[in-house]
Figure 1 (cartoon, rainbow, N blue to C red):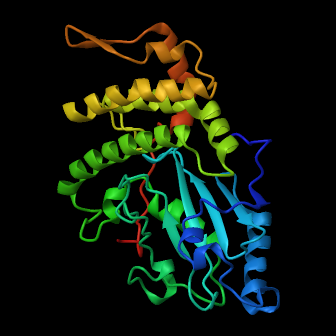
Figure 2: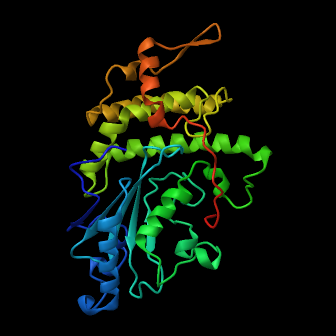
Figure 3: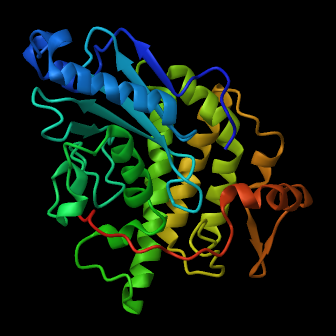
Length: 319
């Protein structure tokens, strides 16, 4: 993933007016009294330091000078998952008895259910938040759990390669369920594209430049991934080719494509001439791809995650 020179991973900002929890607690007033002398304040300052020094390139955080109990984070979808290159925003609130209890999280779903653990209403179902009955070792530990651990858990365990199996009862080793998993993977990618269109139109406060820069750099990879999915090559899903992709899914992506293209052009994404070649034509049952497309596809296969990789077992995250 390319480094972003103009948007630092961690920073302190002022205006929290669009934060989910700002509008739910005390009409925006600070909810913790005697805050600088409190143990909660010290615990949160420790979290700030951990995040400032240890955030990976795929997670960005903003905290608020006047509301130290609030935080906003964005996670970049990882390669080899249907979430790749998507942006996933979370608003965080530290309760008055933190860290004895876990923080509160709100996921900006934009109306889309992209994962069994992430609900339309913003609920995040995760053992580490004590919102799922995982084992004791997976629960929030006041002496050791951190916000960084929480964000990395969402990125690695929730936004994973085969999210269908996050759902309780969906057995990873059931061959019969794998076709359903593939269909779910396609649906998730489509919803991720829809989320991207919404974010391009209305990015969250303090992340406006980040959203533009992210899609400016990654726009071409997103469009080419659309092409791969439409033609039965599920990106990041063990590079399986020749899969049966539903007509509804193809039509959905074909309808989304011009909207994505429009949004990416508005942010001056580096698309070159390849974007015009991604619509494949079928002649006598054979697909024709232009030479330009073939060359571009070969160059960015690694970026799209077209490799055979095994699936790690996911536990303790069912919602």
